[in-house]
Amino acid sequence: MNSSVIPTVFARSKKEFEERFEKLIKVSEYIQIDFMDGKFVKGRSIRVEDIPYLKKYKNNFEAHLMVNNPEKYSEKLKKKGFKKIIFHIESVNKEGAEKLIERIKKLRMEVFVAINPETPVMDIVQLINKVDGVLVMGVHPGKEHQHFIPAVYDKIKELRNFKEKIKIQIDGGVNFDNIRKLKESGADFINSGSLVAEAENPKEIIERLSRE
Image (cartoon, one colour):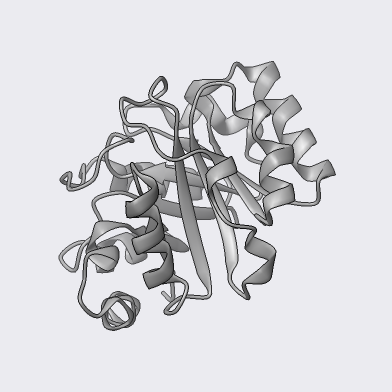
């Protein structure tokens, strides 16, 4: 299966953000930028206000919101130039999730719902026909350099059983040892953070992950 590899800008400071951002915009058409509020996850990232105006770049940007109250971010992200928003089901209730999906779609942006490793697929089944896709965390969010949680393979297959054509994205713990199995399990998009961002030749790593 041919899955797209999307590098991630995971940064706790403006300096780290700038270093990773400048490195990745040169090597990938698609880029994910992580936002953390220090509440939903322990880590804290730079704010939306601190990132550059993205419409001046040719890349396609998506925002991964590891935050409480994700509804506060959608308009700001649209103005910055993001084309896709990923929010966590654990950060909203059912009614809040449906309203947020509607809100993002009205902004003409793609919307994915994310689930943590311990969150049952059943928690998002009612949303599967309303979103453009599902992001499954391969690790607990908010921290880099974690080991992939093997139970996630079954979660991907379970999602695929609920809706055969749902787009499935994986984020966290991806490496050369597990990427082939992730693709075989049914992942359409695969995020890679530190493996790409910390590499001397990030383009080479993306190409190798894509080939596996």
